[in-house]
Amino acid sequence: MPSASISSPLSGQLVTIFGGTGYIGNYVAQSLLQRGARVRLASRSPGKAQSLKPLANLGQLQLMPCDVTHEEHVAAALEGASHVVNLVGAFDGDLIKLTGETPGTVARLAAAGGVKSLVQISAIGADPASPTAYARGKGLGEANVLAAFPKATILRPSIVFGKDDNFLNLFGGMIEMLPVLPVFGPQAKLQLVYADDVAEAVAVALEHPELHGGHTYELGGPEQLTMMEIHERIAAAQGRKRTFLAMPDGISATFAAMPLTPMSRDQWALLKPGSTVAPDARGFAELGIEPKPLGLFLDKWMLRYRKHGRFGAANERAKVRKG
Image (cartoon, rainbow, N blue to C red):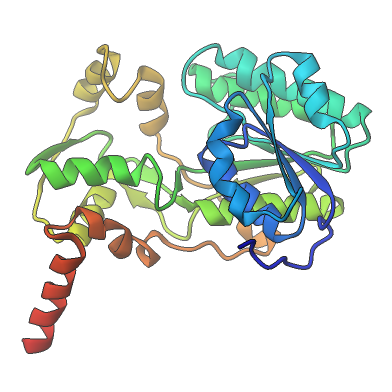
């Protein structure tokens, strides 16, 4: 059954989400549907969002095929929309075109169409002068959006976590299987941010462009954790003892340069300095949101990686009670 609507200025308004069938898009769409917005997900693979249909009322959710590198596709997706979110992102391919140039096209057409508010999802570390294509593309995208739509809101999240993410679950699976694991960038600090909190930030920015338009917000959770600490917390949540080997930077860089590895050169270059909110940056506080810590969820999410799963957790609780 559809979720109860939250009273919102977005109720009845059409919001187009570019890249809305990705991981963050799923959370953003749910937040907007709860607010009574009509949501149009524009994506190259709209079928990925079929699971959202039971959460929407009749006619509240539209799934539209869209390649944002084609201007006519963008124009069609914007037709009738009063609010826009651009979530398109990638780690490979022509990132300068995809995340640097196409956001400008979205913003230009949105401005011409009288769109009320636009949110551009970027990333902490975005910089048009960065040596990495990922950060450079994100930085160019921000600049192009603001040039065409000066009252757009830029959101820069740190690494986003959630129950079904590709971050915690990647390490969760490795820690489940391997007694000894290497840790790349062990001292790199990350300010992991909960997907629901990012979605809430998007909705708040869309609701109040008069307050948040033209501003950039860096979104990080309430604590900074090193990569080593994250590994240790995951192992503890699984109830497993593991040996973690801190990898020197030289070995990490060599590993990232090798083909068919799970980490690219750009990803290593982004990981090494960490991903934390700048001390002087606007953030969740200015949006009126209190971000949730990883510890609120980790034990429950790691149950499936425990020995005997939920039954193993029940046995551990029973031992404690008998203690």
